[in-house]
Length: 557
Image (cartoon, rainbow, N blue to C red; front, side, top):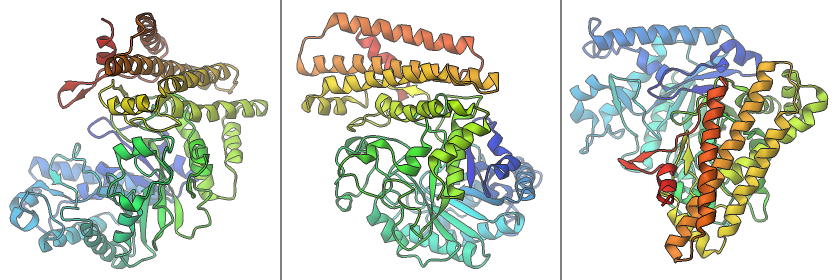
């Protein structure tokens, strides 16, 4: 199944993957509608309380219009023979309902509380109204890890876990009864959170083992242990049972392994894969991750890494029931693209493998190249470009050795040394400053080779040929820019921290390169209409400026 993850609070993403006929033709059997296309926003609650959305009110008109849009979208998907699911945040209710019954719904902190009988009663009513109003629904995808209300002006909500992990059990059992048992619909319960239920087997099993299996109940997990990051696994034998959380800090210090919760327990599972990786450029440049997901990323093939570390090692596990691709989106803002080629490649290979796990990734890759009309003689070199992109992203943005803050760039922002200082301290302690700088330079050499190869490819579409070249140059500039910025920040920090002499000439040369690359990046954007939007060098954190520009400017003295 597939989902387009629209940017919350922004105009809807334009994508071929929104077209049900396109999904059907490309091997998909189901469509997941995003949060603000969920059935919960198309019900008026009139059978429960007709005062919540009066017909003549702005809120009532909003719901009526939303219902019309949702019906149309769901109908289009059903006409193509797709199963229809919608993802909804829990717990989210109409603001008027919560205000009217605050004492019965909320705890002492004002948070909606799933342990309260009235809250559970409202969840049951929500299920009833959604399935009665939208019979097209084949089931629901439940998200609890975050709560987005950007495009839901008449609603409030919060995470259901207020008193401990048992709150998950309460909610799952309630939904299991209402969705799976009463209505014979499928329920996909996302384990996504900030490093507990999603990441650590002890939490996953404590919750899921407390729920009786049902053939319609699935748990959904990202293939990564945390978010859609990468990083070398620096300490492969970490004892997960001794950790209560595995999140940002742990991802930086220990690495981002394959999710250890996949394939354990007693419930069917599906695996979530982001095709337009939000932390790695959002398909503004080559970034072939499908092979890594299916066969294992190179950083997982080092000595001591636990298995399983890829889907191919899981395909005979009876708990694995499918893949859920996010063809588009995730995260916030840009880069914004107007050509879906690179993410389409990831989606094609992943969907093909999900339909036939006996088929090799290489064969599925070749099929995509053939489908796009690439001469057969050029398939091998195109594959080389794509495999290089995976290595170039790891070494250019993260590190094959790990021990780097995994979020120092995300969406379309490059931050400075604000989040990197403790990691720089570790690099200094390990006496690996030169190695970490050289790794970024190696990434630049990889991206220059990608850029060179892109000029040798001959797709039948000149538009596609141009985009492949422009986006490859975009990637080369981006990672050369990051390499220079990294060296400026790390060498400057070392001098300030240790008192070592700063090579002023080298610093000045790097700053000139930084400025030149920034201008080259802007020029690429100005001169090529198909160029994705470029990154930002300014960024704020609780009102303070933390962008890479501020750090580089500090060293212009």
